[in-house]
Length: 620
Image (cartoon, rainbow, N blue to C red; front, side):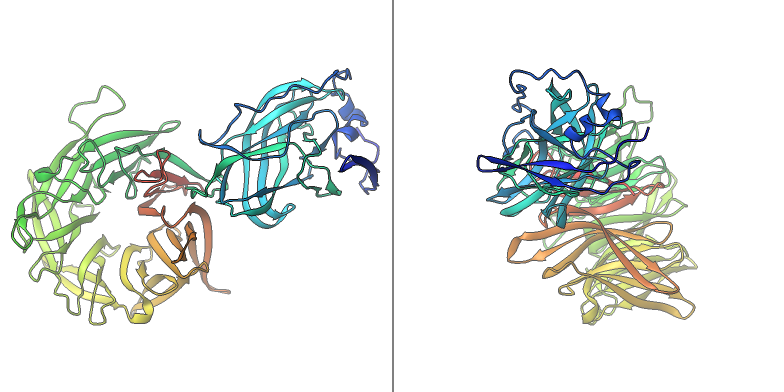
């Protein structure tokens, strides 16, 4: 049905106690004519037919906002623009119309929800709307922008034949806003029928703006949140979500790994019933369910695990403290061990089953290996590979191999570092596409670190340095990954103020070194980890800020891709923000075949900002 052209909009403006009317002419075609307000809709046949009989109530609807809260239980009103009116006017917040209202805060504030008065046709239910917070009406700097769901309550029919309802948003997490004046914007509202939905006008103290008209009277709304500027865990636009919050007893995660079925696994270093570490599994069966696999006991059976890998047989392997007390200056310290966690031999009677621990190897003395035991790789033959940060022939760290042998394991030290041109304190190895081992270590002649290679030949392994870092390339390399073409990528620290990703491209003439520098404007940047997908795209987390200004600290998830040909070079994208420097993502990252990225935060769980963390998922 064609509708009459929309030729005017009546605006009721409040100036003290004086009301005046301003007519604004809009040039909109007849076919595309849409109601900009509830009053206009009442005059349009296709919308007027949806109205209930106009029986104006003797008094305004009794629409209470109390006890309607979203977000955390401690959240309260941080800005209240007055009660829902329901009888004067209302402005469209879908069909391309955007309504903006100002609000002012006097202290650092986290916004976590919104309640507003909505006018809807009888039978309609508001399902979602886009909420944004900006520095000017629907523009300027954007601090938050997300489509959220709403709970609709307290509806009462007004004299225009529409239901006036209290609309409470689902909880969300905005970045911490500093003292000042901002604008909250509503648009793209969605109802079950596709009808227009309107924002109730109440002539409150806020300034207001319509993207098609200009200045209008303000609307009824309340913003929820907490004062004091507690840093939010996530500044998400909907694709980042927490899939698990660790309890205080479980501690905080140190990354996750993924198996072929899409299950996630990880450890916490000091959690569990004995405060010696905790291993877990997260399975998605219509929702993420945590299975507490094992509580470490410390001592001879190990504690303070440094993470896990999924072995070829589907069980978990990792390094931990504990084992044999025969290391350190006086021989009283634990040398460390490698543990294995696997399901019980008989089927479990319920969904949550504890796993059993085996100890493939306990390091026996300083020469054998000592320090942090980082088991980081396996091959298809079932061999395990890892590093010790100290110990070995020169007490500078080792690379070791564990080979399955009958009912046990045979341990071989593949290399002992000397702290000379080979470096010291190795932190990781990976099994390359070519069967060689690649890893990173601190030191070298310049002291900045090396990327090394171990090549097998005739039952022996030959050590060589792939690259030694100079002072202008950073130092302390970590998190080495390899793509399908054999190229190596990693990170270094202390290249003020940048966070560098280094690239070692495998060519017919050897290894070509290059760098990509990340910088967000702070005094420093730091990268926590890297993972590479099948297409060669890099993902990671980082943080930065200004040392003497904690309010400037930030953490982020990023993607970096290299494009060849015309416009060749690295292309960087921030995928999402995780909050402040104090709450960075930590540990290993995992990718599933559909492109979902998984990781952990060290803190920021729902049990408080101190000592408990989260597992998060970022969807593509």
